[in-house]
Length: 251
Image 1: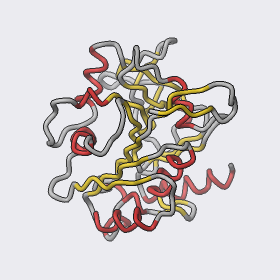
Image 2 (image 1 turned 90 degrees about the vertical axis):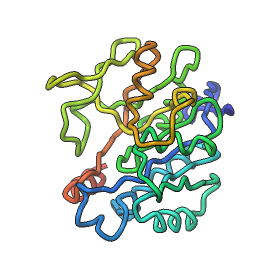
Image 3 (image 1 turned 135 degrees about the vertical axis):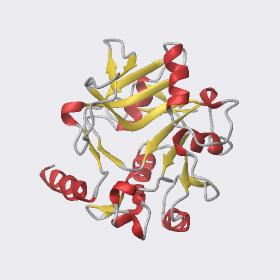
């Protein structure tokens, strides 16, 4: 971990994780037919791929190192990463043998990831910063003394392209509780978080979701959220690309 000044308040310092994992191994079934010949993270939105936008955010925040996992059309993901001109070093976590889902993918990538905590970023979501760089905003709020996971959340009313019922409730101190049953929750997980390495200690390299790690944090009351003050877009279907581009034009 290293210290980096906040962009708007240079006299305030935050601890910035040195690694970020960009989740790019999914099959992108809801994005068909566009994903018949390429992986979802390489689909362009307003002239730039989703993967490049995620890695641009990593570089802009000053994060030294990124890991990108690859399964579906892995050769294309590798080629796109190699073509980038970025100050951040980027490793590929190869999942060609088996798609490991979010939790299993992180477990396999642990040898690449640096530090006691790191970012994870879903490549099918886009964000636009609010007053402070988004990844630095999360780092400013991160407190490893009381937290094992800190999720960037979006109010359901501002979750562009999202069609679900929300994911979490959040109290005034930032503690999270998950939505239950068919109820509606006021916050949506943005796909961006800081999470502690030890939540994956001892886990096998096998397919499992992020919830296995999150449940550990929830059980110990060490799972927190922070509301995103900027814009956020879930790019999940072909129709959502045009909708996102139209909203970007308004911005």
